[in-house]
Image (tube, rainbow, N blue to C red; front, side):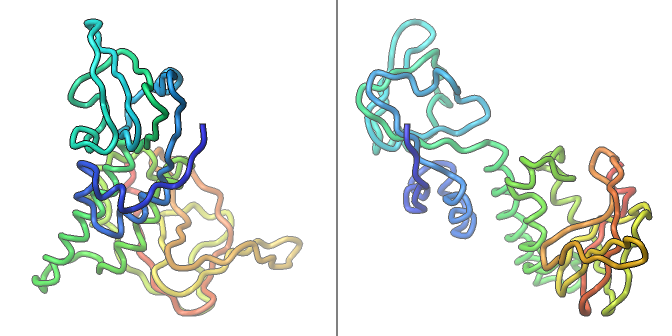
Length: 255
């Protein structure tokens, strides 16, 4: 079984994925790989379709239904534009020819749909001066918090239901720090979760009275606060390399 990244053009022909914006489709293409399965094998013997959208791109696949009957799905047809097994659950499958498939996590697709909805809502909000929401550029920065890599790594928001993302982002507020200002000191408990919007932020640690530089944070990077489950994070000194804006979420919002 070999794999290559899927093309954006291929995703545009699938439902409901075709409804995503061009930006989201490009991101999804970077995370989606083509699976090639040889004739006579069951593509789902080891890993089923639960929690995933699985599409047949090429070849013929026989689906064995619970009553013993079977259905054949052919890649490239109208039926193949829809996820395998969503309309008709099946017990097992068998590749009639060599086949090519892709798998997409349900949660990942939900997140991408949510970001498209937020972007659309932001465009509407521009027509309302009283709207209190981050600019469209800030939405792009905050999307890093909910990237599939961050979620798989067990980030602070890995357990947050997709439906709550919009509400959470409304609770961020912008704060400004000048060059050399200390945002949080080593050993202090973080009361806020910060996301760098513009500028840079240095992470330093004091060892024997000497300040050691550990990292440099840039736009889109996050630090401080507690995880969604309330776990305390170890803090290092963080101060600004230059003037910086950031969005901050209060610790109480995690409760």
